[in-house]
Amino acid sequence: MNNSTFRSGDRVSIPGSYQYDALTEGNAVQRFWHFNKQLVIEQYLPPQASDRIIDVGCGSGVVSEFLAKSGAEVLGIDGNADAISFASEKFQRQNLSFRKGLVDSQFEAEEPFDKIYCLEVLEHIYYDQGRQMLANFHRALRPEGAVFLTTPNYRSFWPLIEWLLDRSRLVPHLAQDQHVEYYHRRKLCELAKAAGFTVDRVFTTCFIAPWVAPLSRKLALKLQRMETGSSLPGSILVAVLRKPAPQST
Image 1 (tube, rainbow, N blue to C red):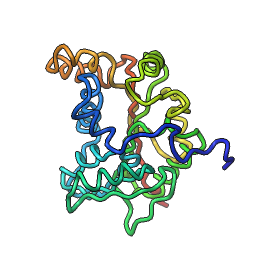
Image 2: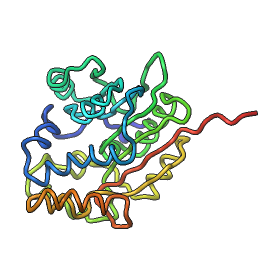
Image 3: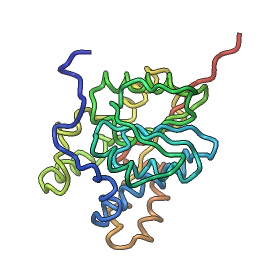
Image 4: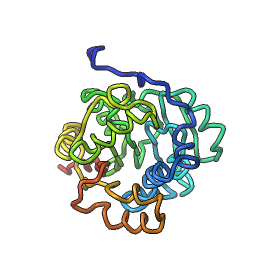
């Protein structure tokens, strides 16, 4: 792979506790935005106690911890050593572990995994790296195993939101410093199919609900249920991918 199209980390420093702090101490929009990840997982690909799971790009470990509460065996992987250190100290369960590693590296395991979750990571690496990452997911999964994948939807209000966030300096700078690849439904589906996956479903979330959360969390939750999976152009794309079973001869 050409070094000019390879990324091993963001250009800005992200605190190891970033996702945990956003979920627990951020403003109402941030808290709902990060909580919404758990809501959508629960709605569309909930973990089972019998699952072996990887959370790729786990950050400070909040999604890994949520997945592990089901009883599933969960491994969180992230390239940020500070995040792995924070997650390992903050979340301690017998069925949960964390490991430093690049998201597009191969995942060595004695047995294949049942599910892989990869939330808002794809936009941080270039297209060819994304294809390599999904190809590695395909190898690591059992037949009929699933991937839960999210990334910003650049055919929504997201480009405007990103522009405003970068100018407000409320979050670490996004455009080009963190986000370098821009997805819409068709591009995401093409990437998944190129890696050998079938697309179970692709939809959006985070249209209006997070912005209503400062006024009423109850109303935000009601809107979340209505808009997620609808035809509205939500700011986050969600895809559930499936590794096909081997064809019988």
